[in-house]
View 1 (tube, rainbow over the protein chains, first blue to last red):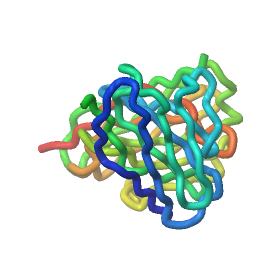
View 2: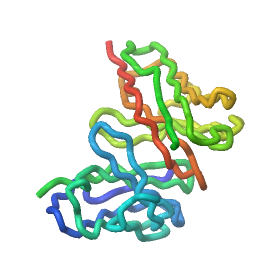
View 3: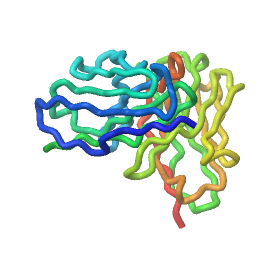
View 4: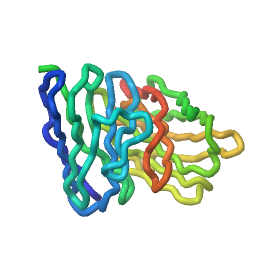
Length: 106
Length: 118
């Protein structure tokens, strides 16, 4: 099974900060990686697919990069609505999620 | 608009059974694979099961294999998860999820809570 490891687990940041979250796969997944945002009590919302493709309707301050085993999600200028938990997920071989990164207000 | 609406959750005792349903609308259900994903209280996301569009290919996570059964009725635009021999550790919100292009999990329902407790 492919394991996904996210870092950090928690991130404290301020509005306007540039934020980067890292996701590492235990083996190569090519570019079959997605990023989701989840707010308390809500279902996850797809942000990025195929490592770097922005889902329709998602603000352009979100971007993704990477391939193989190393991936990043970047929020260029953190907005109040962005405080949430973010998950990476591989869909190269079945589906596995990272453990999540909670973005908190500093 | 794609809509996935789960139902059937509730409180059960260990060893009991429960059947979850997911009503799909806003897309051609019969041509899409579907998944169940769960989230224990305060924890991360865990993939549970997959079913192909025709129902001929099915996968399960090791944690539920032999106890859970996924199925679908394309005529009713519905997905199901039969959960038997439930354990305390099966307590979670269960999400019905569409598997889109390249099996990307693109649309999620709002979830239904299953609580297993004595």
